[in-house]
Image (cartoon, rainbow, N blue to C red):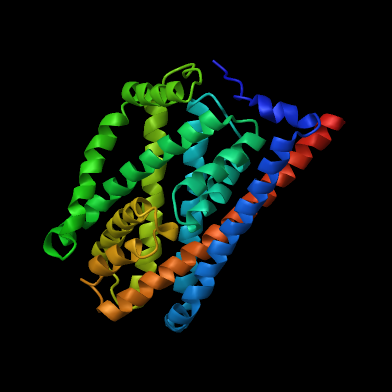
Length: 328
């Protein structure tokens, strides 16, 4: 069964003269994007003095490959969004999904989880996806991301049990809950409950096991790539082994979840670095690990900005191309 995109009435109404409310929302959207970009750029600026020395000491090949692994992970995140939106009855193209996820994700650089959600919802609305669908898609994709990160994080469990980071073990209770709610029937019930609270119609069909597994599998691959990113940096300082690669993958999984839960901090600043330092200090001296954690943060910030810019440009180009074809 082919499901038509869930078109928002407000999107169709944009062709009519804009109301005062729409003008205010338009300017608020622009202001939010400016604040988000300012927050991300400030993070790069504020960290540069601390990480530039460590960054310049690393082999350029390792830095480039490590950065490419981050880019690959970020762009795969858009695939998860695309799968989830399709199951929610709002199929979109990959460029549009990338715009929602990558540009909207920059909202995390402003303290408070609400900004990323609001920005993603506004961008999705412009593509004809109503706010209720994009909001629930964000919740489902985030939940899948947490489950996937903790599945990957199991690789670092032995280090957590032996080290000083045992207080993070409670995170794995979220894995048990998440795995239960990834069952298609329970996931559909949960999404329909959210839609009911938002006074929106329920899903036309329930989630399928195949799509849930596909999205979760892609999400696990994302955290593996983030682990490769960290391993390339660690490897360049003298700890090249498969065991270290497994540790790095697990560490990145746990650290990303810790950063997500620290939503009151801009992009979870500090929480992620604390986990990385605690785990990787088992294979490298602590000062080196701290420097690598800061380098990793800088790389993610640069990749976030660059990938969001690429996604926005590609989506704009595709939209202009579609309009040109329709006019012909």
